[in-house]
Image 1 (cartoon, rainbow, N blue to C red):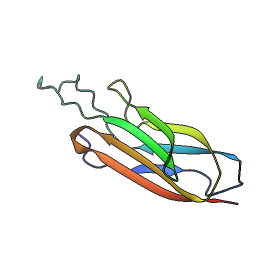
Image 2: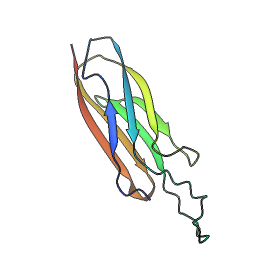
Image 3: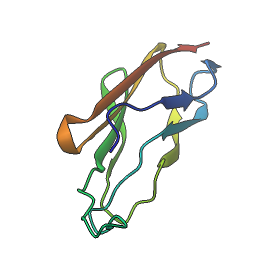
Length: 109
C-alpha cells in the first residue's frame, strides 16, 4: 500500500502569452486494485488514487477520475493556454486518506 509517494510535474516555466504549453504529471503509486491475492491467499486491499485535478490560478485545467483498471504510477500529459503568470497546482487524492499536492509557479512573458 502506498502511504506516501513521489510526484513530479513538469512544464516550461516561462511561456509567451496566448501560447499552448504541455503539462506532464506523474505520481509514484502502486494502484492496488483489490483483486490480487498474496501467496498465502490473502486478498490485498484496494488502494488506488481516485482523482487527479490540475488548476492554473485556481481555474480547472484538467480532471480525471481513476478506477482499479489504471496501472501503477499513472501519468497525465495535457495542454493549457498561458494567459497570466501564477501557480499550477496538481492534486492526487485516493483511498485511505491519500493526498499529494504539488504547486509550481509559471511566468507568462
